[in-house]
Image 1 (cartoon, one colour):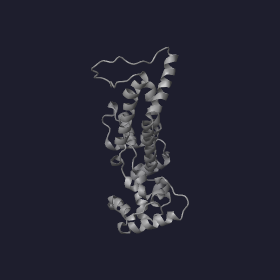
Image 2: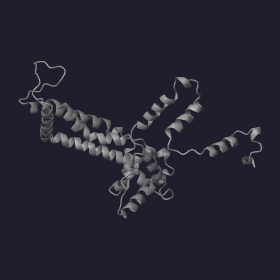
Image 3: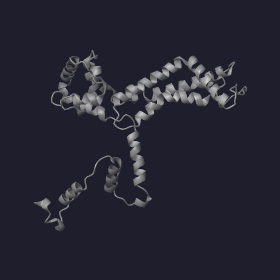
Image 4: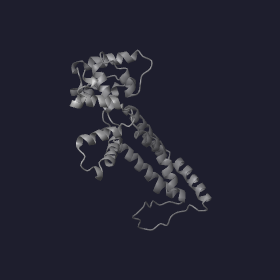
Length: 273
């Protein structure tokens, strides 16, 4: 029963865990996926009677193949290591003591981990075309965006830009739902403030996965055989290791080195002409 319950409940969040570990995630689309998974967990909790029955039938089928029987565990008066809610049948016991607590814990953890307070730049979502066309109060949106006041090139024209941005998308049939696609539609000359805010939105990390990958890379680079390595060399090796997909042209590196380090052996180099 524990295996069947864990498999069916965690199968809901597995795609989310895989998606959030990938690079180049759109923070808006990631939060949308998170909200969908949280909603699915809430649906499972609301329909727990039917779900628990289906999972019990599935567990019984597995037990039959293993020549085993699912029955009530031994109950004692004082239980300290596991739940001990009274029940009349094995199905009811596992529903009350395993399935419901697991679902409640999973839902609570998802709400805590992905609460609005833990979502950086959530106020930037109001700039997405799919949201701005439904925004009745642009003054409130402007007030929310003033958190990024020091990064804006023309703060005084933000409200006027928001009105033009909303009017622009009201005349369009298709409204992008992602920050990256919205950024491509924001002209820097017409919407300088909005483009800056959308640039911030697409560069905000969704999770700490990239930082953790950097720490893992440092463990492989800064080992006991390289204990005397300087900071400049360590930084260079780390950048090369993290950006293995970038194509490095050796001739360009040699030319830059020759220009930067002028020596006698390079005096007749054609690059100096």
